[in-house]
Amino acid sequence: MTRGPTLPAHRLPYLPTPLDAFNTASADEARALLLHCLRSPRWSHRIADHRPYPDLGALLAAADEAAYDLSPGDLAEALAGEPLPELPEGTYSAAHMALGAAHAAYEARFGHAFVINPGDAAPGEVIDHILEAIRSRLANDPEEERVVAADELRRLARGRLLALLSGVGLCSICGSRHMGATSPNAPAPGK
Image 1 (spheres, rainbow, N blue to C red):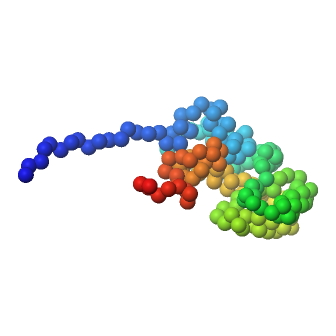
Image 2 (image 1 turned 90 degrees about the horizontal axis):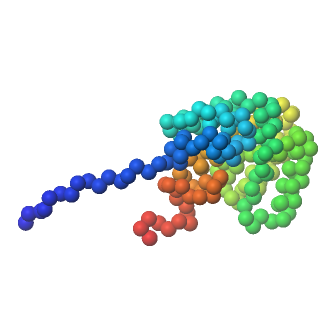
Image 3 (image 1 turned 90 degrees about the vertical axis):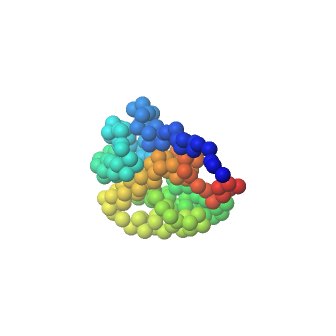
């Protein structure tokens, strides 16, 4: 039996990535987007002004470097705009009260919101992780805490950039699932 001619390989069109969109966005759009990652105008201008980035690793390295260079004023501005850590749904009101009291004590001591990157803490452990960190960090002197808070802000910004531009998981900025994202609630491929 003979076969017919082979069809040419089908090439998919190039689809822009979230990093491509970031690199080609207007300066104002890029800066506004970056302000969601770290609430420092100086940081967002610096990152936006050095576009285009060849890959996500280069962008993250530049973001880290710029975060390490935040002045005390820049840091204060970023901390002032930072929301309190989110608690998992269904958190008991007693936990909210405990966190509220801990946040108030922290803000009274240091004059700014408590920031933490929860990292890989399981949803059921987030509250304990935050409370433990607040208690531990209340023992810091103000300069030591400024360094810790700056590092937490850097880690938060890095995580937000990754979520936004890597296409993994739900974007914490726009709430959309980007290309290549997976979710434990998503159906398996082909289902």
